[in-house]
Image (cartoon, rainbow, N blue to C red; front, side, top):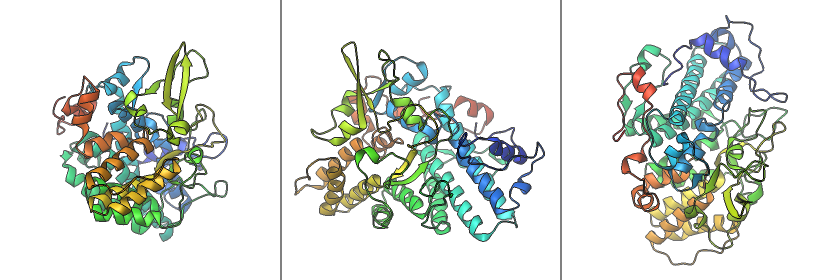
Length: 467
């Protein structure tokens, strides 16, 4: 659904306050609702209520595994690309792997609806922050910046997964119920607008609590700048992408970690993480990708031969970020960036949304596109050294440097928030590569279908070509 239709303001905020964020340890929302008559005006009467409402946005986005921000984009796009394959047949996931999605695929619907629900919730926070006199200016600015970041990040994924999508920036149900699909440039314009505003609103420090003083689970100025760098890269604004990535890299706030520490909750490489809210797992990726303890049960997803072959000899990422389980003489190799499959508090792994290594890769590509080959190679070598690989030999042509960037992105960012799938599409290589690797590949499959349920609800929506 584009919007949670049955939810009006008071029910929306009641629902986010009812969520239990961290089971017995920490809750995103700590204010108990006084009953069914709780109104948004009451929640936004002071700073703490406003903070609780924004924490509810994060909590709802993380409440169910398979949502876009909680494992869904990593798994489903990994199947759509050439990173992973399912080890057992399930129609829903097989359709992604075979690039044969139908508009009634439940996982497609979940990716779409979870994104729009979170956009609606973030917009609701923004609207109430703007009209509530009891909130201090500093809190209003920070929370507004956070809400705009969330909205921009979700629209970024929506436009890259589904193409032209409805651009909903209000909570007016009557207006949203008949909204048409915006063009891709219009969506990117909104993304840039939200991010530039958030960049001005947010400080460089992270919002933390006394119980979690080192957490990086709420966006700061650098998280916004890092996402801007990615957006500029996708828009081929090379100089802007380089400048934004450089600002993050030289900020002094982040450093590359050892390979086994990258995805820990304490990682100094993390620019933005999301804290778990489940009592049974740390991260959805860990739960999806790691095999169960049963010695006869394979992992749910295995690395494709194409990804396995992409690692150079001696690449530490293959040793540290993949695992192998032997069953009856068959070796199942699987993603293992996260090491914990089950188990709740205390959480030692957080969902890593943005990290420093990507910024080096963004800057390397942007520099190469501008003809600055040596500095691009320097950035690539920074990532290669961490992986235990030798420096790239020089000189290299622009084509060779860009190919090296693509190789590093593939083995550094695999099964991580959809990077490979989106890289294949934005660079125009999806058809050439996937047509060779998959017998079922069709060019129209590069864009997911608009869910059937939403087409039925909104007659102004149209379907993508091929579906």
